[in-house]
Length: 378
Image (cartoon, rainbow, N blue to C red; front, top):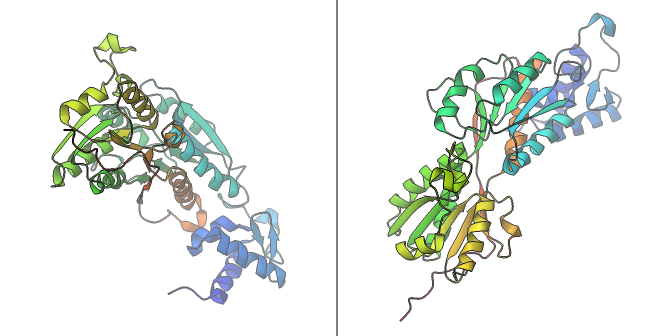
């Protein structure tokens, strides 16, 4: 049952009168309502003269004791003096940059300074960045490690579990039972996203489907595993296969060029002919656009000859053939992660309650790159 407005406003007054100035975001976390709701309540209470309103802060009509006698709690007015929140994301990763901007909007609205750290692609690059941020006084951490392979992920478990400040993983789901299993995380449900892609193609009549996917991130590994599980379980799917979407899409390649590690560019047109496939799921967006271009060069038109669903939806809409795409809620992941971190940082919330492993569902953006399979040729 929703709490009556007057009771909620009385609780706000009680908190403000007992503690002095309190940030609106802290009140929202403690009352478990939105910041917009609390802001509206504070404005109304200020209008009738029951409290004073500052920039993002609610104050009592009279300070209960001289301000100098009361230390300001961390996470309230001293937010900017209490240290920044470190935000660590991989270099050249447009997908996670959208997540970054979602987190930034929440933290800046709460008056918390952000220290952004960009991790280069070298193995173990995140650890020294986090250690430097902690040495500079960071009081919280939002991080999306690159984790190109399962091995690189496991190597980070130990130190990341012991950073000593509230930490939330973004778009990462650690292995069950690992040292990070009990760490707060916010992630897209990539199984569901893969289901959307396969279900869309199946609903259009496709029975032979190819997944051309990356294999150099936790997201890529989740999509590959989900596709194999879903395709194998769908009785309508007669044939399916998983291939690498580009020579650079594998984890920790042995060489910088395709010729150096023995991998040639994927000939998707030949693979479609070999498997008799009429539908393809392509991860990620840039690889998808390049593969569609190569299909056109080979005389295979999308969607006339092959229907395509891309995965990521960062640039899928910008191709000469705008691609239907699975769209993970990238910015929302960042916002949810930042809101969860604020709970941990709030002195009023204690330890922030139980660990949360939050999953948000992707959506399917239909743009016309998929239709019914071509009619058999005589």
